[in-house]
Amino acid sequence: QRRVRGKKNLKFDKFLEDSSKHPDVHRLGIESFQILPIQRIPRYQLLLENYQKETPPEHIDYKDLKEAIASIKEVAQKINQGKSEDQNAKRIVALQEEVGDKHVIVQPHRKLVLEGDLMIQFLSSEEPLESVPARGFLFNDALLLKISRPKKKMSRHKE
Image (tube, rainbow, N blue to C red):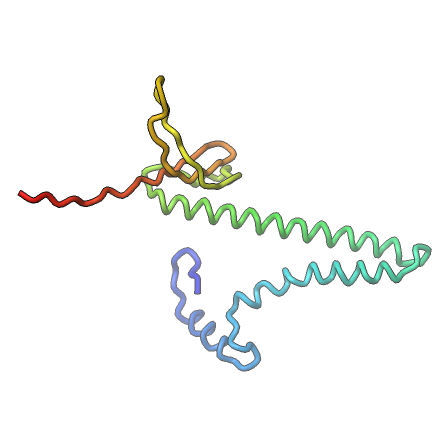
């Protein structure tokens, strides 16, 4: 179970443990139930859209039905946007943990735009020197390159 801000609440932990053992919940954790209201929104949208297909345009409720569908689509879009922003923030926090306190990655305004593997090629004026694999993180205001350094081989010298 996740802890909020690192605090322990033993009574709540006991409640969660006891609740998950109740036969009505089929050993599902609280996370399974927290998502239920979010999952209902797309179901309501489908239900209303199917209902609209069966409703003649001249019906007294048709206009209200159309407005309800537009509203529920807007709610679904906001939920999806919030989930995406939450995942983005979690990824930035995970990167901060990888980098440590040496560099500040987490900023209130910062968004991760793109992440991917790449090769960095160092050049001299005469010819390419070498290429090294890296992981690139493009933010809305910064670029972070995490270079994978090859592991040095341990050599044994006989003397």
